[in-house]
Length: 271
Length: 271
Image 1 (tube, each protein chain N blue to C red):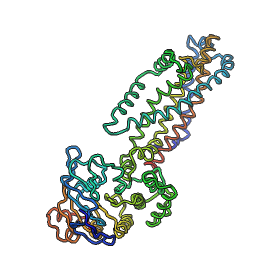
Image 2: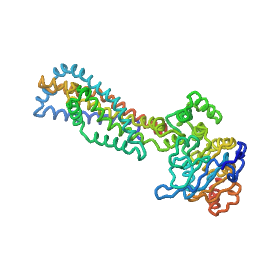
Image 3: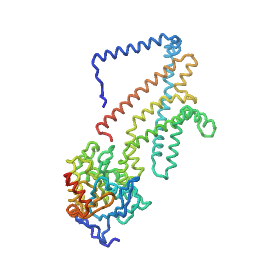
Image 4: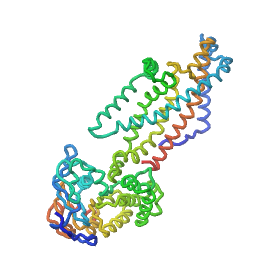
């Protein structure tokens, strides 16, 4: 499956890749994923491969399955059918140690979900200390340097409720990064933010993309998706109806439903 | 929103004062002029017996305080264990959940006095070597068994009040189920249920008199002994006063904590 050199160096980061080539080893591969909540079938056969250092943006209306797909990839939702591979390991197989898998996959939620009873520093160091058994001193030093890198050093000892939404979300991203994940899932991370706070979070994500972080991003920020994504997937009613490079999806979508969706976004002034 | 303090104009204050005086005046007049009053007065409100019995009563209350303090520590621990047992997920752990649920159901259903009789007389009565026969020991055991059932339900309510997204965030970082519970869910849950826990402890404080039935010479039993010797019920009045003096500050503290929680929630301080 993997060639001797899959030529996926870190500098390939922001290069649009149409999809993993025959010898590229995909970071994530989803095959025939189905997921229902009760009678409601949310995902109806998702196939998706994401290469190393690729940034894939999931777009689509609310309820199209973007969030559920991300939660399934992180094993937060049990799946009904299909397989999910991370670097050739089937993580959807029964008996897989979910805690070990999740260590390598970061997810950031729309509603931040910081731990309200802990300082920013403790939020960031909890998982490295408890899961990776990093000694407290080193965990705190690493967390501090991450916070510094993203302009949050002065918030180190604050509690989440003393931070703005944008700051909280940046802390949530730093918290995920502290586990040094191979893959980062971002679930509409700017949707709960006041408009003036969106930019600081997008800037952080942009920096991560430049650094070569493999990401799957569910987003309603179409301008941002067009700029950052190596590939866009349009989800509609639980399937990936159309995918391709941003230029193609945004300028000349093949599917009428994609065009219709984008038209509505343009009318709302969001593109 | 309820205003922190209501303001009355002088006229309403005057009306309130007059109405209070009239109400209690009439009530007092009815009691004092009732046919049995002289008898009740001499058997319940005997000043001499009151002052003579008070030191003994207060000394005996020390036994209740010891019962209460030791039982409280054990209840907090055992109640938490029960609550966690009931909150464990997954089909494998069904027997654990069932056991904890059955325990809570049974001990909440039984009148306290019954449990105190059965454990306090029954088990020492078996005469098994090494089993303590000290009634104080069995008093602690029964109070712990009884109140742990209530307290575990309080804890459980707290655990369930923590939003599932908190657990999702913790698990997504690779924390195990137990680690999430220990570091993320329980600290938030326990903080929220401190006022209702204090409420249960006001109940426990009073219920320490129940163990007088199995021969612990505590405040109520001491009053009984004095009553039997003097043919006068006034010692019970002394007992009542001791409980009022001890319980009211705890009740006010509980109210204050609840009010503080509300303020913090209103300020968005606690999620």
